[in-house]
Image 1 (cartoon, rainbow, N blue to C red):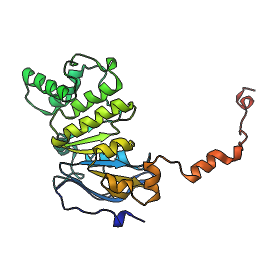
Image 2: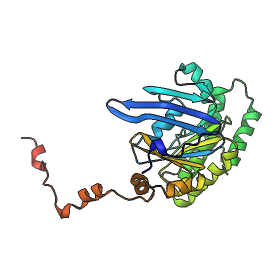
Image 3: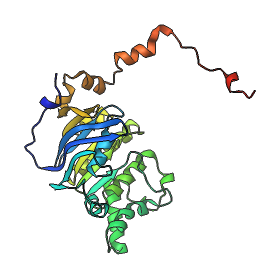
Length: 282
């Protein structure tokens, strides 16, 4: 059976992000357990795994939105997890982050949302230059002309595309996508997939997703997390044929025998512990 120690370990590439022996713990729960990973420059790395396995924590670690309890984080061969926040700001401008819910500012227009990171991080930019940045980014996601719309007037797919336009406003070297197709129908999901593919020549991509159709389409490399560790690492064909039962269960969307046994239980039901009268005032 394939494990982290004997997975596909070819690292003959230029790594833009390196995580070395990362452990992240919240209270008594270990979310990432002595995990090491190198992200290849110019490629799309997809991270899959069940809910709660540490996928979002992992990409937040890459941009040091969370700091490890143990281990080290490197960007472009420079350690960044030990930097003060004022130094981290410079590195974070080299990343774009597409949040799961988009995280657009509802009180701002589409143009103002995209302008926000530019105005925050660039000291001097005139109006014409800013308008051109906004226009180009919106054209890349197929929404030029939506500059004066507010998020409330957009569909879910359009909001994700505007959020992506904002994520690339500063021409980042790395784009981090957190569940980019969540909440979208299959057609809108495929539009997002096409945009990820379109942007692969502009930046390195790291994508967290539950959507295997999306993962197979966009990934150069797929990594599966389970209980805070990497249990599979390779291209789409490698993952499809991977012998680990947790990998097969996840990629085929199958409930475990233990989960099914609890649900079925021979139609037996537990009696409720309380009744409505227990909450009535005496």
